[in-house]
Image (cartoon, rainbow, N blue to C red; front, side, top):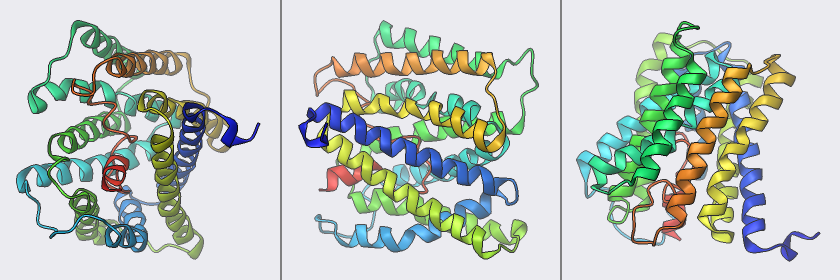
Length: 318
């Protein structure tokens, strides 16, 4: 059936599925390079290679004004959260099986729900609180703290989810007043400056094919982001948002084919619990009025890493 004959929601869902398949390919390259290089080096070059395209995005912004943030302290806090998230997410991909990393990162919507209370002053009902508690229990199933020693990779995955939720909720707080250019630029610039300052301590010379892989990471992130933008412009957020969980399928497939990883039962069970909790929160938010609290639906992106432009800022800028 031709794509144009599908309903808008069906087209949006298919575009989102394509986007997250591309993002999963992005993460495979991160994991492949992570076996040889520090996450600092990978983050630095992947962001650096993104700048030519991102400069064009900033140049075509329809809103006029300067790049001085209206909320400098919130902007600084978000930039720090994004820098920490980028480093931790790339570390987790390097050290953990793909499926296990995604299972931890999928906790981000749960943490966004929790952070919406102190940061945004919003109310979370008993149903969403129950979903958060169940979802965090799913994270514990993945971690198995009494059976498997927690590693640096597990800690990095948890910190990435927490940092991503923090960066996303700050955008929700200041996004209506800050220019999209500011929201896009500062986390990316922060990553280049911080990782660039740390780079001499970990730098390893890279052959041309590895530099090409880093360039491919940048290109894939921009392609995937573009797909998600089209998805949200086509379908409803409540339909598009849950498509991010399709990444667990790609993680299982790529992990098996490329890294000889076979997810164990606790990882799959825990991931299923976290995914079900996240989808329940999305369902509850989609039933609320547009003026009610919808911090997860309003995020409109996958986990924040500060290494590619946020979908919500690009949509709001057009």
